[in-house]
Amino acid sequence: MSDIRKSSIFYLEHLKSRGVKNVYKSKVKKEKEEQKETPKYKPFIEGLERPNENNKYSNLDEVKKELGDCARCGLHKLRTNIVFGEGNPRTQLMFVGEGPGQDEDESGRPFVGRAGQLLTKIIEAMNLKREDVYIANIVKCRPPGNRAPVDDEIIKCAPFLMSQISVIKPKVIVALGSPATCTLFNKKIKISEMRGKFYDWDYGIKLMPTFHPAYLLRNPKDKGLVWDDMKKVMSFLGIELPKTGG
Ligand code: SF4
Image (cartoon, rainbow, N blue to C red; front, side, top):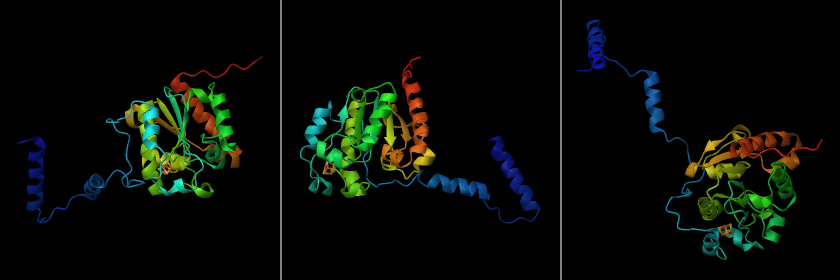
């Protein structure tokens, strides 16, 4: 008999001798047990696929071919172009936003409007070019009025993003804004609380949530926070700050 068991029995006998008839589980223990039974978090979207190791695609062209002239969700009805994503398929760094806007819908390219131009500036400030990284979105067709994508659209479209990620396998994904971060974690989050830290994600990829460039256009005072986050990404990837003249 173990020492713990022996001393528990001894203690219970002692209580019995003092007239104690019932022994209740301590509140702390009960709370701990309840926590064990509660799932870690409620998924943001039930049924959202994670990237998976049995990924059947060996390159991005295959993912694009499978996507085809997609009409899997209602967003296809209003789109001009599917915005698949672009950049270096062997990059260490990927940026993921929520969905195309009007300029992206018209051009078929991600992040080319005002917010995209700011993202390009951020990438260049990191001593990189757009062609060095890969840029994509959670959904590949423009949500009307630039609203955030809804559950059904994300469930239908995000698996293609997950396939792109599992082909590219970057070292770091920068999640731009709440919808992208919520989808990648499949968890409701507050971007202001989560940004600026690395989180472990699938395939050993590190995820860095930060503010969306469209938010920075409305709140330029927070540009410094995003730059702080990007410096962490640069340091992790061993990218040196550009040398300033002098
Ligand atoms: S948003 Fe995605 S799933 Fe929906 S129609 Fe466009 S490509 Fe297909």
